[in-house]
Length: 311
Image (cartoon, rainbow, N blue to C red):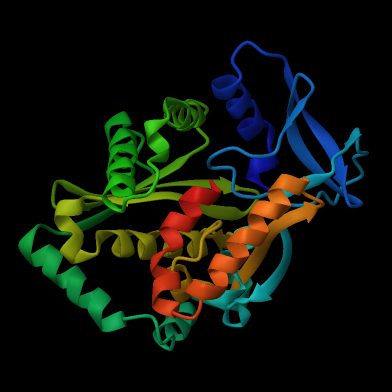
């Protein structure tokens, strides 16, 4: 079970999405696997923005209901080098992660990182020196509890959605309130990177059962030239490693930067048999994919849009 099946997450979704209605977590069975989902009245909530994926239960809990399909389930794990962009479909997506047990030390992780063809170590160091010279010395804060920093992250992310012409998930007040509710419950880790006194980047994550989940990264667009998001990410990765976490989870999405760091990929997709209209729509989308994947650059470029449409 991951964070998206926890009491904290499910009850927060119920509070902001279904106010005043009776709800409870319920164990369900799909294709012989058991999952923990939110039940509101007689409805099982199997989709919600920012609900990344379910994972099968391994404990002794008995299923209280049988569902025909779950749309987002971590079905298997492959090595990151074995995942290819063309493997993604509208229903099957990668969720890259770092398995920290692969590395005896942080230095060993960095050595492997420098061997990644996608990773630009010299560029990262150059940008670090440049921002410190032109803006101010960098300062990393693991958890910044101030409301202003949290709210700034949501505003920056909202502006990023708009700038990239994909659906602004934070235009829906329920999504904003979900994160505010999780913050009120002290469930979020809000990491910040300052350049001098200026906030350069913010990252909203969750630590749950030994896994650091990277959820909402954002940065000051006026400082884009310094790659503040990348600089903050590497600070958080180091913190996660040094804290003894089992994994650093990038969650669902095939953005290329994730594969610079990831060691493995969860293959996320449906379990069970979806309704006929959904199957028909997916068949049509697969036809479009067969055209787009002939042009890898276009396929990668459209990833943010495709992810927004899935959500």
